[in-house]
Amino acid sequence: MTDDLASLQAETEAALAAAGDLRALEAVRVGTLGKSGSLTALLKGLGQVPAEQRKERGAALNRLKGALEAAIEARRVELDAAALEARLAAERLDVTLPPRPFPPAGPEAGAIHPIGRTVEELTAIFGAMGFGVAEGPDIEGDWFNFGALNIPDHHPARQDHDTFYLPAGPDGRRPVLRTHTSPVQIRTMLSQEPPVRVIVPGRTYRADHDATHSPMFHQVEGLVIDRGITLGHLKGCLIDFLRAFFGISDLPVRFRASYFPFTEPSMEVDIGWNRKTGELGKGGDWLEILGSGMVHPKVLANCGIDPREWQGFAFGMGIERITMLKHGIPDLRPFYESDVRWLRHYGAPVLSPANLVEGV
Ligand code: PHE
Picture 1 (spheres, protein in one colour):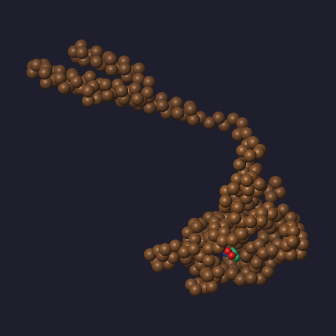
Picture 2 (cartoon, rainbow, N blue to C red):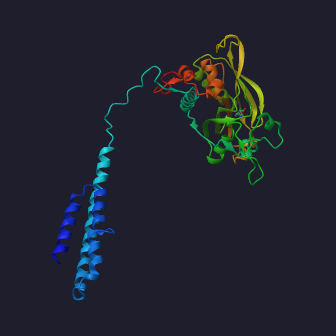
Picture 3 (cartoon, rainbow, N blue to C red):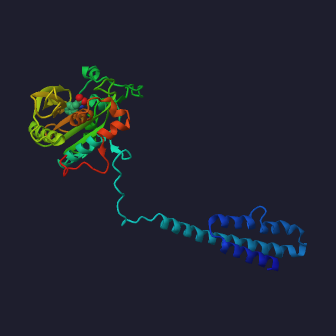
């Protein structure tokens, strides 16, 4: 190899060793092998080399090019590994660090929205009774929201629900914003084998708007399917839940015959309160709080479950409603107004998870 090539190789190797990161490495590569790089210039100059030396010179240049390319690649691998090491070191988590300090009390502290808080409490109480949590989509097929629940076309219950419809799909049926969480009963029974024990907290929609109704609101559905389930199980489960949720161990609970197409028999559930003072648990007045019943055999059959072998109960209640009653909130609308003063007043402290030890 001629002297100029040997010194170019030595210089380039020194520059590579000195390149501390991928950007510096790229600069060395461009300076050598790039369009106006030093080696590229020598290759371009090959034409001026006297013909008898050209072949040898060309071969030497190509060898050098190969060697430099290999050296650059080797350095790239080294620098990549070093960059990864540095990143791992920088992002290392020290699990022995103490927990984040509690947020300051006062105006800077956030709060958990009462709806979210109620959902946490519901989940804790029903969780202790062995219920899991199921979910479904807000935009539902007509069959899930109505048909499978034994609400046929032209059934008056469809009008009762003040349904929001979407443009019709290919089957000619209009999807709906689900009017209740009951379609998730169907989805759950279709996707899991009995026995089933789930609650379904979620958003629901009806075209209705005043101080106690919002076009978007929340419900929690409950569904239990097992062998030998009776009305007694339904009653025990709901009485225990209502007393735990409202924190009143002798809360009066009344079951009143009612009608839902998807349960038979159906019952509305009332709790005792004082209409004048709003106080729960005493006063001799009754307040309707939820709908419930034994799952209709047709609904079980619609989901491929044999009603002679399996029975169940279901219930559905409005989350805003029980939240308003529990905390004495008079108006529904501020739930959705994001007014931070309201949230500070009715919100629950962060980092105070709902659990049964607290006596939820
Ligand atoms: N889906 C009913 C409603 O929204 C409530 C309900 C659920 C009733 C389950 C019975 C059983 O009004």
